[in-house]
Image (tube, rainbow, N blue to C red; front, side, top):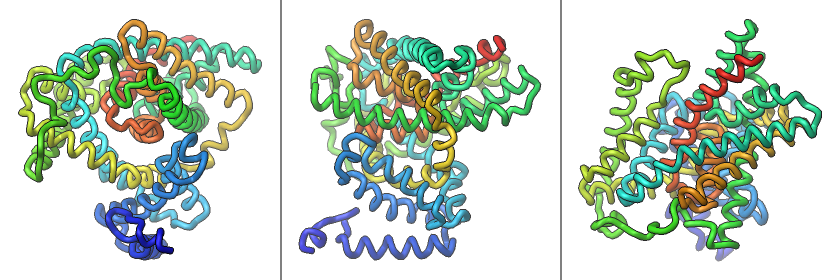
Amino acid sequence: MSKIKETKMLGFSMPFFLIMVVVFMAIALTGSTMASFVGALGFCLIVGTLIGWVGDRIPIWKDWLGGGMLLASIGTSALVMFNLIPAETADILSNFNNTMGFLDLYILTLITGAILSIDRKLLIRAFAGFIPAILGGVAMSALLTAIAAILTGQDVLEAQLNVMLPIMGGGNGAGCIPMSSMWGEVTGNDPQEWYAPAFAIMSLGNLVSVFCAALLDRIGKKYPSLTGNGVMMKGNADVKGAEDPKDVKIGPAEYASGFALALFLYCLADFYASKISIINNVLNLGFSIHKFAFMVIFAAIANGLGLIPIEIRAGARGMQQFFAKYMSFPLMVAIGAGTNLADYLEAFTIPNLVMIIACVLGAMLGAVLIGTPLFKFYPVEIAITAGLDMAGGGGSGDVQILGAAHRMELMSFAQISSRIGGAIMLIIASVLFGMI
């Protein structure tokens, strides 16, 4: 009992915090006051912190199955599935993540802090070698998926269309949905016929990627030479510029400045993507570049040209650390509320499982084979970002994967995989669908 009393959660004593959890669960059961941003955030923060705290302390689960991050997501899905959270409340929490923009807020904060924390020269080197590593992962995932299809007696082309594309396509909104439209145009059938199983495959591929991320984290701890512990590149990983944001002492003003800059870059990228971008608005290439990809580019340019004062860079890094530490579990609750556990079960056939695992392993292996010898990336970091984040479920998948790997500072690279890599996959999809 004394140990429980000494335990602090968000600064509260455990008994008091548990009372807050019980009250929020009771409110959730009635659906009262949950329809607002404040109500949804309160539920996700209080309940999510408890579930995440438990997940980070379960033996085996905490080391190999994603710990608190995955438990917060799957645990919430289970609460919805068994009607411990009403469907109305689940819809509100899911809308909080998507329609209300909590996921966007989380990602934009991590992107800005991550990019502005990197030394300019190292930033340029890292991004120059990252796209080739992504392409290496895509090529190897296609190859291993084909081999798995042959071994399980499946058609190779169908394996590429129905397994590799959904998994490597950049998630649901940027991948499965536009791909299903392409499939419908080519076949003349209802796009839902391809979309429904593809979404299930993508969901299971994301789950396998989360497991692999936790495994890579363990491998990095056992073999320290394989990882930069959140730093992407070898060699001059420790070389900093004249000023390092980590060395700057910051207060509330710098936090506010960093947060304001993150919001500004997001709005600028959103406006540019929807109104100005020639690729998105003029050229009819069959795909578009996501606003987060433009945000990464704008933030990288601002850092590379030295346009951002060191105090604001430090403030952006501080906000990134705050969101990564305290807002990750709440985000996973919101993601879990919108995830149907039955989607995983639909894809659980032996041939599918073999091909899904082969696809995810191929993404990691190809990224390492290209990124490590040619561009000096650490194997663990490049396997996670250029490999697993390509095989994950878009933005929410990036959060789950980086959370399981304990490397949230890599969000900017994860977003390049999900967004720019996802756009590349739409081009590949148009070619493959044309082969039907």
